[in-house]
Image (cartoon, rainbow, N blue to C red; front, side):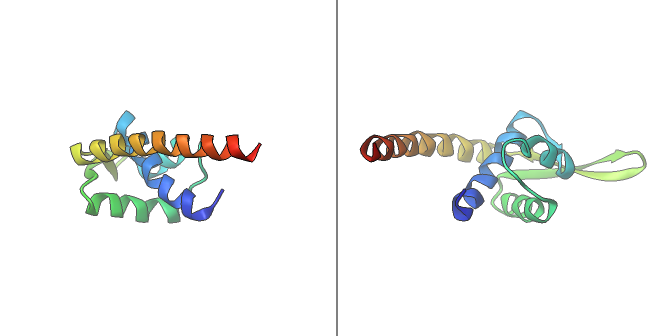
Length: 103
């Protein structure tokens, strides 16, 4: 997959994962890895960007005597995800055209 395309999709995949349930870094990696490869060094900058854009918020939970940072999709993040779905519909039409013309 084109690295630039993948980079843009990673943020959306993380938002989609958080739309299902609040989660923490390691769990997000486990949830999305079957769909798209992602490492901790890639995920955490994405989460910081999403938080700066107000697409996610955070809160802490004590787990086994340690603080675990959870991420929660915000209303703005949900709107971004809906917009991305609309963009995907347009992209599907473009790919369908390309495939049709290439045959």
